[in-house]
Image 1 (cartoon, rainbow, N blue to C red):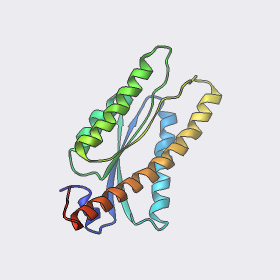
Image 2: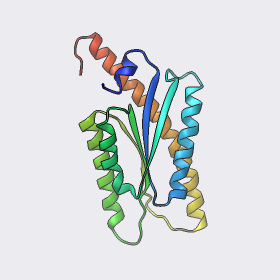
Image 3: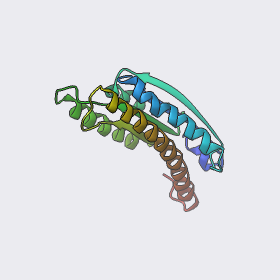
Image 4: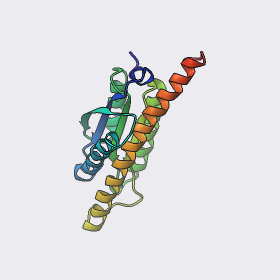
Length: 173
């Protein structure tokens, strides 16, 4: 069963997968915490989505997120997948390659599976492990977690609406 069919049938329930990379876990945890809080706030404040379950998964680094996202999308259990990670410059060029590959792969996952993937995988231009940068990115990931929650719900609702309209007009996809 298509995980979004439940929404087109008028249900307000959905299951989301949240995949988190563990590099700089203390920073990326802020995204997860803010995501959870914002989902709870949105569900309780008039959103058509009244019941959202979230399953959490951890992977070593951002590079491992796309494969797990694809495997989870193929289960047909999730209305959306959220990816959170922090790809930083460790003094070599590799971080730009990793960031590009991860974001491209996440886009490919959602295009192949038709399960939306919301990205909170960030690559700062500069990151140094001193207090000022750590504090800035702790706060920034809180913002990104809230944004990811809002984007996730809005995307689920939009896809459900598009599917419902396509069925209504005889052009189901």
